[in-house]
Every structure is written in structure tokens, then in C-alpha cells.
Length: 212
Image (cartoon, rainbow, N blue to C red):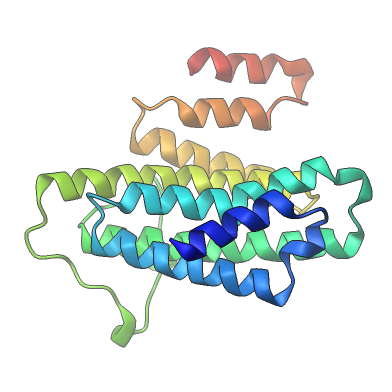
């Protein structure tokens, strides 16, 4: 809780992107990330969703909001720091995606081709399938997987805004994966609309918003 409160203070008080990357704030974010991940896998049914929401908002979403607020003053060095931060987030979420799929026995190859070949652990670190998870736990894991598909799409969308090459097509890939994984949830269509806001005179965005 203390780490979470400190992370809220950081998000509320920063005035420049560089403030996010001083040693103290990096340490606080790392602790928050590690504790949230531990909670996610310790009790996915009761606190997993909240842990995921806190991690996403305080470590990734709020940082991008700060960038948008201070965009005119952001330096190239700060943009490079942002790009590196979000790229590290891709690895973080892909790791959780793979671990959830293994522990709760989800086959993701129908939404992410070559999934099993793309994410490989050393044998000593490979997660193990959970024994007899409850239906509620498995449902919570499924919902978390869907959120992570969207998180990955959002991270690539942020990287696209930051001018990182080939990010837009990767954002579309992950949003499409979320749609394939659970087509009854409309959020990926909203995100695709946001991604498409400045293309094709806004017609693509209108299409996606209507689908939502």
C-alpha cells in the first residue's frame, strides 16, 4: 500500500518526463510492479484485477499522460527514455501472458500464431500448470489475458505516438488478438478507433467506434 501511495504521489507531482526516471522513482515503480505481479499470481481471483489495473495505470498510462501534458517541452533524450521504458513493458507483459497461459492451460496459438515457439523459458524457470484451478480462477485468468492483449496494443500505440518504427502495425496485431480471444468485449474496437483517428479522414476511426 505504501509503495502504491508513493507511486500516486509521483504521478501527481511530476513536472517533466525526466522526473519519472530519477533513481528513487524508478525504484518505487519496480517495487510496485513486482508486488503487483506477486499479488496477481498469488490470488488472481480476489486481487488480480486490481493489481493489474494499478500496474498499468501507474507505470505506463500515467507516464504517457504526462508526456501529452508536457509534449512541447519534451526533449529527444526524454523521448528516448520513454521509448525504452515502453519497450521494456512489452517484455514484461509478454512474460505474464506466457505464464498465465501455461499455469491456467490456455491455448493462445489461435490468436497469436507460433505463440509456444515465441515465448520460451529456460527449463528451470518454466512455469508449471496449476493443479485443479477453480472455475472462478480460470475466468479471472481469461479476463487478465484479454486485458494484457489490450495493454500490449496500447504500448505499441504509445510507441507509435513517440515515433518508434513499425509500432502501428504491432498495435493493430495485439488489438486484433484481443478481439479474436473474446469478440464480445468492445474495448479493442475503441482502441483501434483511437489509433486510427488521424488516418483516412477519420472514416476508419468512425467504423471502429461503431463496432464498439
